[in-house]
Length: 203
Image 1 (cartoon, rainbow, N blue to C red):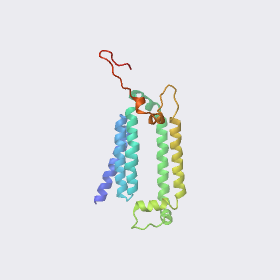
Image 2 (image 1 turned 135 degrees about the horizontal axis):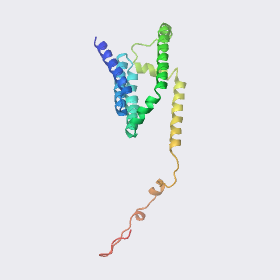
Image 3 (image 1 turned 135 degrees about the vertical axis):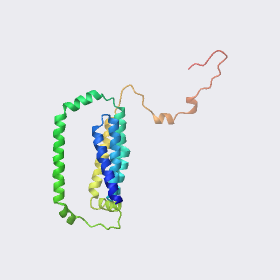
Image 4 (image 1 turned 120 degrees about the horizontal axis):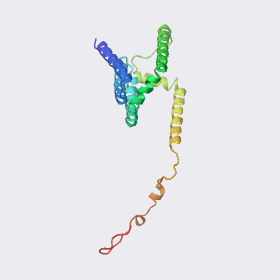
């Protein structure tokens, strides 16, 4: 009974916060509603026993992606009048894309319901005593090891490419020479002077 109440509570909050994410006029409010949706989706994952996915939702999406969205939105100078004009201009295209997405979701749900029995027959049995994270780790590092390593390699190449693209030499900037700073002697950095009264110090 408590699980059913928690499920309907989390599901209702996810639906409401998702709708408010789309309908909010302020982008900062939209990001805050999105964070609330992620938290309640994590609660749903805990109810079905997928604690690893719930942890990913909280740590990765809430702790990194949503906070990054919030920082970007707060630093942008958004013209809300121009934003509403653009939304009205591309309303037809957005409606067509939304309809296509809804049709794809219905087709996917129908295909899943038709192949659910066959999928249950082909699924590998898992020891009920094994934790969910342990079973997932065993599957990733045995059957899908090479695909997992390939995904990590692709992410590494993307990270290096982003660093190379953003690290550019600019004219007129002063760069730091670490070796020259480390090799500097104290007598080269300071100078002891004894000025007379009223003479001052020359810089």
